[in-house]
Amino acid sequence: MRDPLLLYSTNTWLAYAIAERYYGGVHFAWCSPVYDGAKADAHVNIPPSSSPADIYRLLLDEVQRGEQHSSVLAGKLEGLLRGAEARLKEGVIGDAEFDQIRRTVETSPLNDFRPVLYLIPYDRVRGTVVEAPVEERAHPSSVEYKVNPLPRDCFDMLELKV
Picture (tube, rainbow, N blue to C red):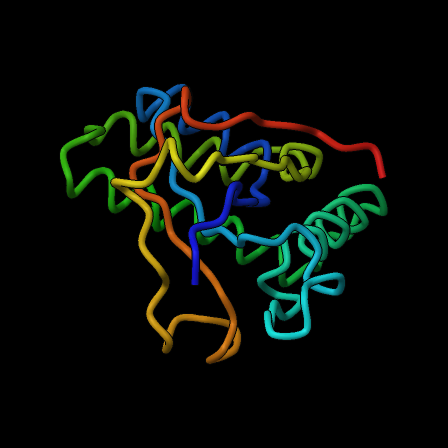
């Protein structure tokens, strides 16, 4: 398979803001070479839980409708806390910053979990992108990547009005 031109990743605005403020503009992204899995070529399987378009629409809908019991948003909150714990262990942040992130995540309004889309030119991240292991993918034959680290100057961030 040849390298894609772009990778797409849907994240929350809060994840973006935390990485900018506390991690020196260095982000993490779980990516797809296809924005909308439902419109992917027949040989490319991008299930809804890995489709940036599906994730974007789901997050946007739940935020706009004020879904207080969202398992998706709860998962995003947990992911932000796991990421902060990892950055603490790596020495990127200290205990005080970890506590600030934890309190920020736990008290942020629902709107802070609104979706944002990262457009990542593959050539800019060629050295840090890895294909996700089969056991971590949403489907064994899906095409999924992880980019870590993802410096801010390697992607564009968009907020779509869909």
